[in-house]
Image (tube, rainbow, N blue to C red; front, side):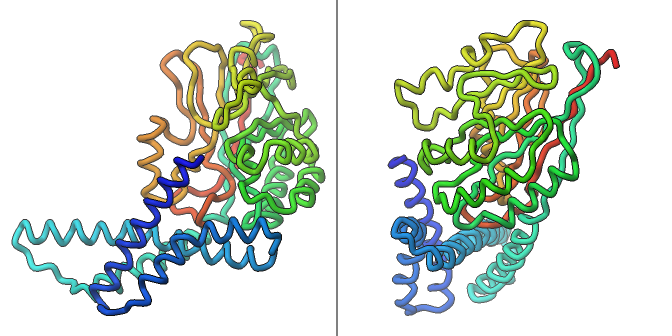
Length: 364
């Protein structure tokens, strides 16, 4: 965790140095820029501190300001780099670059604001992605599963997001609801009140959840209490039978202690399943084990990149795309884009989703 925070601070600070350097070129001698850059770089830590002092109202306002700025800065950084590349290419080809420093700064700023506005809207356009799977392992009929993932409930994401999610679940009427991690965020806020939203909707064949990395960050005991209060059966290196299929789940290994080793063991989770069972594995990160047998793995974690072009970094890191992938051995992996946001409250070309999976018998 300390390593992650150090790297994140270095990257975020470098982005500020780049952006404020552009401003300095256009408007030199603005010494207040240095102080502003330092304050904005450390603003997520200020939010963290304020939350732990229970300054609820001030924390919410500061969090929205801080993380909205983070989204704008990321967009400005990407657009600015594209302009720099164009400028360098024009110089290499002996073309005149049409933008002065001031014009480039203004254009990049306007494009970033436009993308930020669109991203704020897209983050609230919850979609339902549907997939259909046939199998001889289901004796007859069918079962439907709604997968929700990566809500990141906390200071910024709360009642409004959950109302959208529950409304969609009522609309699609799944037999089973599964939550594949990061339902709560490191900034766990009013979790008991949020749990009541889930309590208002009970799928006929039950709700099941697994632990993601942010459940560890918010505190495992608090996270487990929230999930169970919300009506989920939490699968921690174990399995359950529902609707003629086997649901197995493992903890995310982000914080691995000796007593937790069994809870991240996929083989242990599948120990009671037979070769004739249709097995759905719930695992937060889209990392596929080569040995344990399953038919379909449901994962989340990567948010579909959340903000373009970050999607290319997630593909590089995990080697998978969002959506449905057939693996080389015939097993299936589905990676959900998530319903919430982490960090900036925006999404760009990665709309939030709930997945509706229909598993039906070939012998229907």
